[in-house]
Image (cartoon, rainbow, N blue to C red):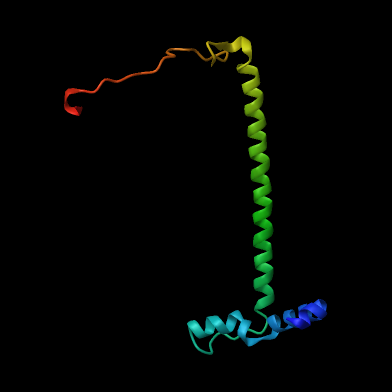
Amino acid sequence: ISQAATNPNAWLRNTASWLEASDDTDPGRMLAGWFCDGFLKSQKLKAPVVLAWLVLQTVGIVLQVALLQEMSGHAAHFETTWAANCSPEHQHHGICLGPTWNESFSRTLEFLPTATEG
């Protein structure tokens, strides 16, 4: 820890070098140990895995931004519709009545219990 505190750049380079070259962090060896011992030996499996992960994350961010833009558009459309159809001249007893909406019943419905319910 003291090496990381005194020279963080060197520590980061050493750690990155260890992660890239160590057999302990090689996904190919881990998979080979689980499935078939010695069958899967990869020398450069880490770089493609990291690249695939970065591509997946980038695609996820792009799709999240697209979803946010779509939601913002729908929210703006809702606000515009609400402002046009629920202005004070379109309200009746505090209930919003748009140009094609009608008010059929505006009281609370009460259902009395039947004989079987007590």
